[in-house]
Structure formats: structure tokens, C-alpha cells
Image 1 (tube, rainbow, N blue to C red):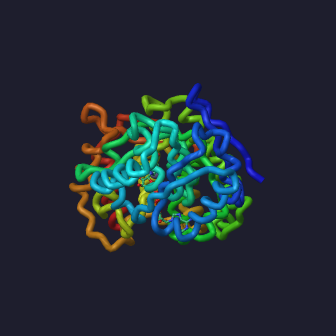
Image 2 (image 1 turned 45 degrees about the vertical axis):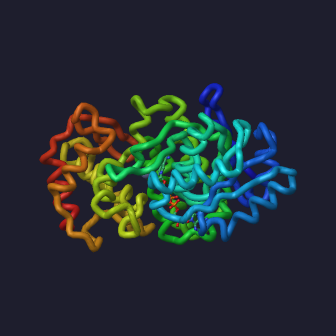
Length: 368
Ligand SMILES: NC(=O)c1ccc[n+]([C@@H]2O[C@H](COP(=O)([O-])OP(=O)(O)OC[C@H]3O[C@@H](n4cnc5c(N)ncnc54)[C@H](O)[C@@H]3O)[C@@H](O)[C@H]2O)c1
Ligand SMILES: [Zn+2]
């Protein structure tokens, strides 16, 4: 059974389908959207081993033609060089403007496929089939696409909405536990931003969801996508409210920049730590009660989410961490923008932060 959620964006509106075993019926789900019964699938070398044949069988059932480009798994694939190679591989298949690209994989595959779709022949349509929890609750929804530069992550990109998102929770069975937990951090984020009821639900069901309960996973993904979709519908290009989705991210980006966007610290792990830093900052500024931080930390301990960078094999330099904030692409006119909170479910955007407090929170967390 699939549940459908509509992202309302006028003529760019689309459906998100969430459920078990959707991949096996992918052809039937997407056929009506295709301008031409011909797609180009982009996937990575890990995901392809598990799921490419399932997708291609489903396409064949509906008489949909396909070509495949298999990229290397990992963040390195978001480099300009790899992107050039990808475009070249796609063009070799002689696509036209009615060709649809299909992203089968995690956030990396989704981001490069979306970006490719936005520039290929000045724009073609694309479909997201996310296979990580992070991609299912976050990156596949909302239309942000992009690649990295040596100056930073996601600095080259576009807003390009998919025409459908198919989130098959059954694909999560093969996802490494660490990746699942990293995606879970983004799920918790929606509760912390503005949905206390969802946070309570996660307190009750999070552990079972992480242990593999597919129906709980589907419910959490739907709630997360609903939250993201409603924020995106209000503010597609991040002029205002969409910034709330960056809760914990200003801190996270600084930590990730220091650890090199690799296995030392996954994005979701950095976000988990960053959200705790945002909570501590809010407490230090007298905005948020300590008991809310304590409650969040209890949930982290119960699910295994990391809460501080001190445990990582990294020698943290607070000055360097502070430097990253001023370089964050979301810094406006040199002013630091942070998402702080009045408590669980009460996040807000502000430029009114004292750098000394931030420095103090960082120093404590890195020593903890
Ligand atoms: N566009 C957005 O709005 C947005 C939002 C958040 C993150 N992102 C981007 O997403 C990327 C991170 O995404 P991610 O965490 O999904 O990473 P990822 O795409 O690198 O996937 C993580 C790992 O899991 C493997 N994998 C994927 N699905 C699997 C499955 N079902 N079974 C087994 N292995 C599987 C992948 O091959 C990879 O090794 C980052 O580049 C980040 O910048 C984008
Ligand atoms: Zn994130």
C-alpha cells in the first residue's frame, strides 16, 4: 500500500509516494508522467547491485525503454569533474527534451541527477527514487539540486523540482545502520523545528523504526515529507521560512568542513550534533529551558544519535570552526544567520547571536 502526498507548487506540483515494495511497481507509478516512454536511470555502484534490476524489470513490464549510467558511490561523485563525465555519459544516449531522468539512490545521486536534469538540453524532467532514509525524508523533496566545489559543498546548483518522488521503504533494509541513523537525525529535526507531537511520536517509536519496522518508517517518512513540503510550498526559494530546515546545519556544516565530508562524520551525524549545539546556544541566551535539551539528549541516548563532537578522532580548532560560519553560503551581508529555539518544536531564524556565546558552546562541546 502506498500513501500519496501532494507538494503544492502550482504548475510544478508533484506527488510523493511512500510505501513498501514500490520499486517493483515503479513502471506503473511513473508511466503516466513520461512524455516519451524512454528514461535514463542514474544510480551508484552500490545501489545498482541491490535495486537496478528491480527497477528495470518494472519499467520493462510497462514497455518503458531505459538506459543506465552507474556512478561511483560517495560524495566524491558530486565534484565538477564527475559531473562533466555524467553529462557526457547521458548525452551519449542522445536524449531529447522529452527524455526523463530517474535518480535511483541516496542524496548524492538525487542531487547530481536533479542538477543534470536542470541543465540537460536547458531542462528536462526527472523522478526521484530515494533509497536512503536521509534522501526519503529530506533531500529528494524540495527541488534543491547541486554539486560541490573546492570552495565548499553544494555551491553550484539550481532549484529544479522532480515530477514525482517514489520512496520505497523496503530499500532501507539493505542500508547500513549508521546511514539509517544519520537519516534519522533529519527526521528528528522536523519534530524539533515545529512539531512537538511528532517529537513525542519519535520518542515512542524511534527505536522500533530504526530496528526496521517498515510501517513506522513509512509513517515517519510521510510526516517528515509533509513538514518539508509545507515549508517548501510556502517558501520554495528559501527567502524566509525555508531556512528553518537548516536547524542545526550552520554548526553541522562547520564540523563537516573540518572533517572533510567523508566517513569520519556523516552529514546526518553532524546535523544531530549541530542541533544539540543550537539548543545549548539557545539555553545560554536565555531563550530555551534546559529541560528541553535534557529531554532531547535522553532521546539521543535511546536511539544512538551522537550529541557532541568530542568523541570523534579529530583535533578541533575553535577559531577555524568559527571561521566557517562567516563563509557559510547562507551568511547574508556577512551577518551570521542561526536557527535557534524557544524549546522543542519552537525553532526560529535569527541574526541576533553573540559570537562569544557560540564560541563558548563550541569549546564546551569539543571538550565534553
Ligand atoms: N538537495 C537537498 O535538499 C539535500 C538535502 C540534504 C542532503 N543533501 C545531499 O545528500 C547527500 C547525502 O545523501 P545520503 O546520506 O543519502 O548519501 P549517499 O547518497 O552518499 O548514500 C549513502 C551511502 O549509502 C549507499 N546506499 C544508498 N542507498 C542504499 C541502500 N538502499 N542500501 C544500501 N546502500 C545504500 C550509497 O551508495 C552510499 O554509499 C549529500 O551530498 C548532501 O549534500 C541534499
Ligand atoms: Zn541536512
